Image 1 (cartoon, rainbow, N blue to C red):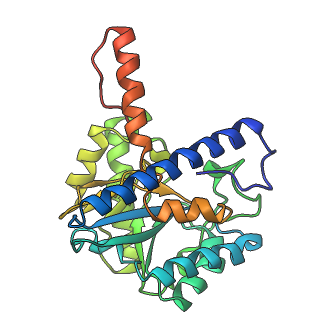
Image 2: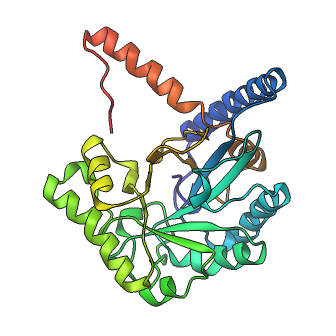
Length: 286
């Protein structure tokens, strides 16, 4: 998640990191294209994008991105990630926090272009200022009301994003379980439809919270780790690629191609290097 450009000051460091990621992604894209030429018969893949806010000044840029997706005819309902046809590449769209800017600026575009999407709602924050997004969102940004959420078209799936948007791994086991379980129950009571998807606030999770989500009856849970969905049935824990309406077009093209999914590999290398120097075995982190 990157902050709305008008909310934060420009940072040479962030810009440099952005350029480095872009350069690596270009190389990764070229490598993948070469691999596809060598091995034409491959399993189906899907990149799951996640947005947060779509502010009014960026509605046209968001629509430009969605027209690119529509032209590719690759957008799928996220419930179809368990059945990806061979030799295809699909795109699934998700939106965290269920913000008013999503309802006002993104939903009309998605409906007009017939692109399915999923929004993850914070069940105890309807109509509130998203305090967890301070420094990232415009000050006037609000979470959708329960009425707005209930009036979303059926092409928009709804998933849970906990009750209060906490760092789940910082809570006690009991408190984390309540955030995971009760948020689903409240959303189902409000919307009168099954809630089978969950995304972790702040991308914060561990083995314990994953297990609690399984016990709560979710079919898939979503992280902020940029991992490409590949093969037959998707794993329970699904990675996503961070996307914003203010992304450069080249960035967006590379993201929907899955070219930003190199990052977990480099993170694993860094963890192994740190473990080697510390003399400890590598442990899977949150």
